[in-house]
Image (cartoon, rainbow, N blue to C red; front, side, top):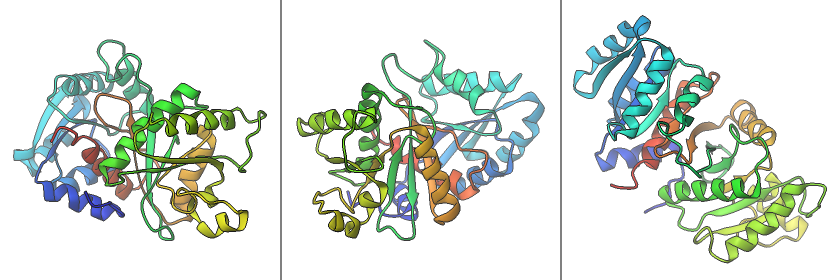
Length: 306
């Protein structure tokens, strides 16, 4: 598969497959969610199971009337009941993707994480992957974790990287280049994540993550700017050419996400990983474009059996 370098190319690649993914969207009651639904219907990317509470049933019915062949409406008594119903539709195989509409993320995640009836298998690690199309970078940049894990343990790093490189490969990165991010290139026991990085690199060299290039610790500039690496005397397939950046904690990952979107004029996408199906949980402040591209990313991530 040719490497996908832009989010528009991602959408075009999905359209060329001619397969509509089935999306259970919880409470499609806000303008941005309506925008994503209507745009993805026009782009022929998805069909929708519109799961809503009784108070907002009229909005789902209006969306259904606009595209009756590719939407179905499910009514629940409350938003929490709508979340539980949408999760059950995914578990039963009636939907390929779960998407958040106008419901609090905490409420949706309670349904996603509920033991025995949720979407996270026992032993799996829930994490989040972001993808940025940055005007000054030559390809899409993936990074984790900007939303879920406060300070990853070694086990959580392993799971996060496995999830992330699988998605990178779905977008044509046959040998993902993984940068382990820190404020410098030095391993220091005062920063325990740098010790985890040493272990992760050793495991990568033994094939734990498949065919990847992994290096670090390194700062974000070195990961994405070859000139910075040259100045520091660093030589690595990752330096200046990272596909995936792994951040040491949620604060740094989230700050990077918000900085790129606000000051970097980047188009963003993101989704949860580790679940039995992709879960799209956009931030309230994300643009309509960002939410649409997040849905497109989830559509690509859900194509493993096609």
